[in-house]
Image 1: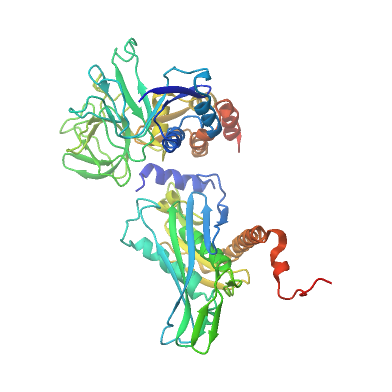
Image 2: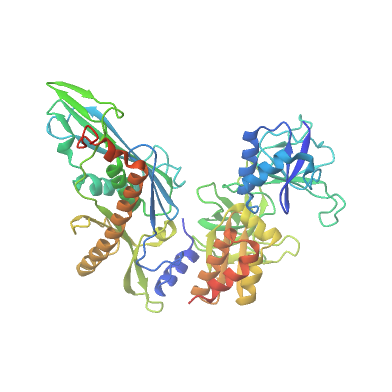
Length: 299
Length: 295
């Protein structure tokens, strides 16, 4: 709920290209990723928005129609922990929209190679589950979730399995190196809020301003929102603009180009965080020491 | 339970019960940090805890931290209980129901009308209306007798009677739009009945600063911080005032409204007030000047 004063103030500020937190129109809040001690435990903060993702794996029976594929599910449960505007155990329209866009961005974009999750065709496969918990809400849930889930998928390692005929043995993590998931690409969601800026005298719409990464208060004023999911190979995975004010086609092309630049930054940030975590885990270079390619005896 | 007082850092002192467990000490410390006191360091706290009577400020009662259900051993008879205490007629001592700093006014002090008042200053997230609080609300619905106003998001609204304005009559009514902002005083608040607010100063019968707030920008701030701003003041407000003229309304429901000559200036004032909680006292002027002089 926003007062007329704040609504007017925010649009007036946008007219002179100012935002509440001092960012420019095309500036994303910096994302920060931290990994937990276990594989696939990611905490992502973006301004005040805070998301925790936990990736887990389980062996189940594959879908009958897709016997050669594993299963990947994303659970986004936005509760009142994030903000009192979200009710517990009840999905509002906004929450359904968020989970659908996230679903499209990370699951339907084919980021995870499902065939690599198959163990015994039609009988056993891995089910990868991403549980997303929202700890704090200040806009940008789709962008934060998408980045956090992808960082989680890259970070996660599932235990190795032995297949002997029909029998499947799950090897202990201590006994054999756990296996990383085969992630094919890294889709990044970038959300723009569209604001109709009206002329003071004639009250006609002068222009539609596209503002990157709106905060919770800006979201209440925006007239529409557009989410672009794109990866660093310039593959557009989705463009979602559910309702609201219209926007010309050429501007969407422009936005895609800008979104690509943002995607590069996010990809770089995730890569860097993964590398640092890997270095931290591989202290003393034990991986090279334990490699099977090494000579057995010292010369 | 006997109590010892330790100094933590320059100005603030903390009273520690000897029976307190370390867990409770840590909780008290967390409370201290939450109640928008200057941040205190854990090391100093431990230092004071183990140093004991050799601490310089031993035995001075200045600030006391309490947790809900704590035993407070001052007798209730000649005390006036303020916010944070449960007045249970059967209990001999006041029972704290929130975590925070205990304050006690001096009975000799004429300013507080010689009252022996105790209250707890705590950092709550949800605003509960109390009589005589100055609040900023948003009109949610209009009805025949007046308005329904929201003083804190997603909490039950309060009533603003159409007659609760200066010089209001059936013919001369104040017209407020939906989602308009009003600055008002809580005139009645009880647990069972919807709270009421009014836009009249009870002393003069005039507007006295209350009424609709036009234009400007209203933002949320921690409730304890708005109380501090309203009752004790803050150098940030004086410093901004020296640089630019501006209007401000502070609602103890955790809302602050500011207005100045143009939008960019208001925006800068908002940034100063929003960030000033993180600044040390001696850097406030420098930071305010830096923000206000930015293009």
